Length: 487
Ligand code: F6R
Image (cartoon, rainbow, N blue to C red; front, side, top):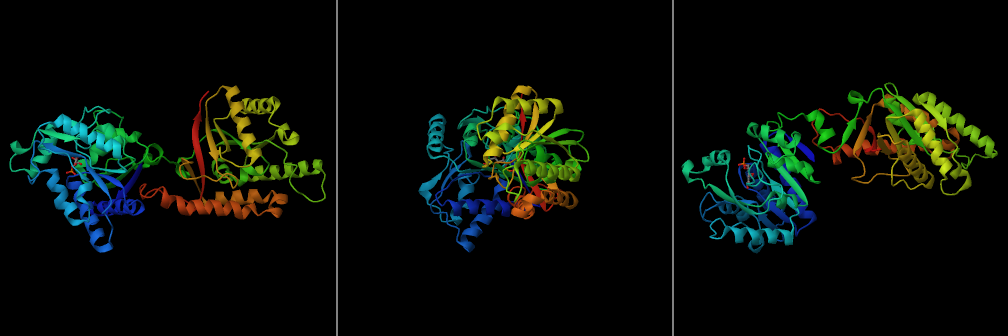
């Protein structure tokens, strides 16, 4: 889930309109699930303006509305049918054939709902817009609605009737029932965009985002949807614990100076002698004051080109470079000299046993290793051997898979970001320089610096936008996929 903070209602509406307009421009035949209610008014106004001023083209989109009162006539000014035409459809170039609305005056709600549900399932919804009720409802799925529910007739909650009575002359005029698409119908949408503004929504939003997933708060199910964006204004977000959001909700854990792990034993797998500092070296420098860091150097790296040297000399030179690196990063090196590197064969059981023994001796809480899509075969084998060794260890550890120049992450491949202060990042660069023979051949200092800088420039914009203005990300960051390795 991504949380985008907006300062007020207008800002929330503008942000939502930008997202919807973008989606339409990328996919002109998109299917959008529309919602009604006060929350949507600003968004619809902005979309109408985007059509008239910027020419955003709605002619090929298909729409399904979330819900409708029952019974209610289409031309009743409080029907959601009227709402949609008045506030949006009359102001854009939508093809009316492509508009789908539930018929609130149907005599056969069961058939109407069944038909609507199968239309949605056949067509699919690309992006579903949602508001949230003060009781946590989405659509008219009131508290207690089953997470498996489909489009159906529902009795409205007293809270909803009270809340919506402001639109009717008398409270008794508010229909007591509604037709609504179900929770499972909503969850079948590819993407969901939920908007919430105002103090009144703060409690419901807190339950939805930071409470348990329960049918008592129907919106809480959205915690389980893979692609949800929530735009909230300051008032609606006032009860949220924004600090914990990056960890628990937005999908990214951010490690920086203010929340460093402490007193952990951390084993960093370095397939070649210089891989750990070129990859997660900044994170090692960041964590080393408060944790006990061990670098496990899997191979001798003797195949590296160092002119006029014998194999033995190269092994020795590279070990010395690691010792210098470890002094800078404040870590303890362990040289395993695994066989597979020398033999060129698949890893032997002895290699796994060696790593197993080392891990057993170290008993780490966190194991840091090359990521699964690292393209270099020595890196791949080192990862596989480590995972095999961990299986033998029968201990649960945190696994942090790191990005390196040989294994760049794509979107969705990482879930943890370490934000590295300048002085710590300089340590990484210094540590890389201690691999003098390698840096002379390829400028890994520039490579590592550029990658961390590129990530630092792009990730906050692409992934973290709106995380809460109080989270400052340093210009250099490193990326990881963190998971639990279960015994
Ligand atoms: C509307 C809908 C409802 C509203 C919710 C918030 O189609 O299904 O779930 O989104 O009741 O209403 P407002 O925006 O009026 O606060």
